[in-house]
Structures are given as C-alpha cells and as structure tokens.
Length: 205
Image 1 (cartoon, rainbow, N blue to C red):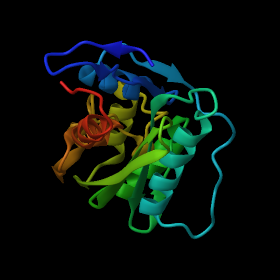
Image 2: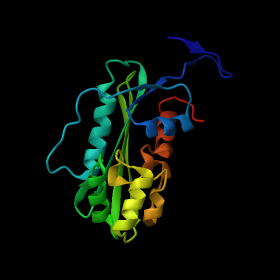
Image 3: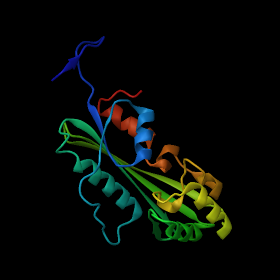
C-alpha cells in the first residue's frame, strides 16, 4: 500500500472518493467540501417498492447507488445520495415538464413539504457503511396559478423533486423552513458527509 509521511510517522494514504451520482448539483456540493474526487453514474434502474415510506426510500436508494459502484471501485469511499419529497401523503417526484410541475406546486400550496435526503458512504476497503437520513421541512406560501406560472418560466425546475430549485428562485415560494443542514435540501448533506469522511480516514477540511 502506498504510504505518505507525516509528523507522527508513516500513515496510509487517504482513500480516493467516488460520487455515485449523475446530479450536477451533488457534484457542485461535493466540490465545496473536497477536491479531486471521481464521479460515476449508478448502474441499473432504481427499484420501486410499493408502500415504502419516504424516509426508507431515500435511504434505500442512497445505498443502491453506492453499492452499484463497489465492483468498479474496490478500494474507495463511495458516496450515494438520494432525496425523496413528500407532501400531505403524496410523493413529489421530478416533474420532467411544466404540466407536472404546475400540479405539484398547486398541491403543495399552503402545505409543508418533507424532504428526506439519504446519505450512504461505503468504504470498499473494509466493507464499512456509514448511513444517515436528513429531514428538512419547507412550509409553502399560498400560491396563485399566476405566481406558479411565473416561477416555472423563470426557473424551469423539471429535474427537481417538488418542482422548485432551492439554490435558485425556489425560496420565493416559501414561508419558512426547518433544517439541520441547508445543503441537504439542494441534494447532499455536507455536514454529515464531512463527519463520515473523517471517520473513514479522509481529512476534512
């Protein structure tokens, strides 16, 4: 094993990090935390389980993404993350087009949206898994059809769960939010991720 010198003697080189995600937002968020990571797209389709709770689904899909890359990266720290949005008993998926986004925002108007952001860090050197789920709540304003239409024209949030971009104009739709980690709402909980990386031997910062 390659080793690096340190003040306290020889120490193992820090492990390489892999982000198992096709999300541009997650790449940008991880880039705020560390440099020099690799990116791969998860292999295989994301399985759907009927009757699964939103929190459980977020964690399961996060694990699915991390595990999908373990064969290709057998001595790495693999990060998998997935977010599920739920409002008044309905899962709010990525709308893909304006019609779905309009329906989601009309449903969420005046209600609270629960965002469950799963995180799994898989250390394929040892098989150790670090896992957590962040819970963020967003209280939506009462939104008129005209407001929704203006927002969608401005932000085009077709690839965003719950049909808004938290990193852009989305906050204009909110009354307030409650979160332990603002980065989780965008797609990757950096506070918990930094903790997991440190525990796995990757120095952060």
